[in-house]
Image: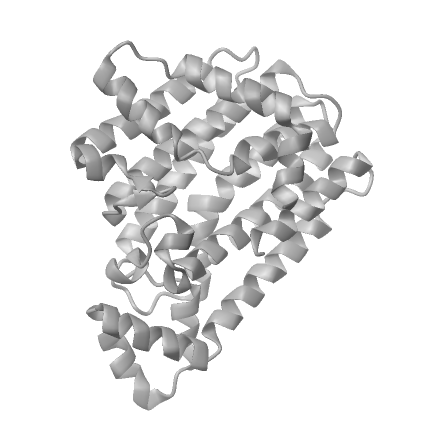
Length: 319
């Protein structure tokens, strides 16, 4: 509901972002156009464009550059979704088939690359290239996070600190940059830009922790996407790290066996242990702490109505 308030407030701007997106991604090759239309169904919450626009409005006025930046970050995000589905061998997203399930991994990889190339083509239209440089640097950071996660697949001794570094890079960095760029394009002072960047970073950490919990506990019919891939790919997320660190010594060997060869029955047993040991509760509490940190970073002198929307939006992340 809180995100819907932001959509209503930004309705005209978000419609312009969609129009820019469609113009930039237009392709006269029917087969490619069909794949691009399929990816358009992944658009979902448009959280990142919303944050660019809200932070811009909180610091002054929304300019044409805000709409361009909002479109670019959404294209980058879309590219990461396409590539993630390949890495996770996921069949569904937003209650529809993924590109890799429809057209194969090769087409999905190249289509994700195409979204990235269009993002930077569009970004080059901005008068100032500082935004392009930051988005490029952030995209590099996102790739580093994904590579770190791949490197640590099957590494059951992953620490909480290492996990947080991975999700900070692969998820939180882009959300942080959205907030920073929105404020900067509105002409905000650097201190305000940095404060909103920290708001976004903490929001992103909470978002990813919550999504990782969903992957373990959610139902695919309700989530609208393939779940359980973290276990299948042996990714150690926060609930699993907490369980490994806090389960009785005699159970640790059996736990590692469940993690090494996950099956539907073992998934159910593992979920029971996560609940019994308070690991799901611990991860949710951790996400809630990041939401509180995000809220504390919001400058008190922002536009009052927008500040309230940003406060409420933070609360919706873990709802």
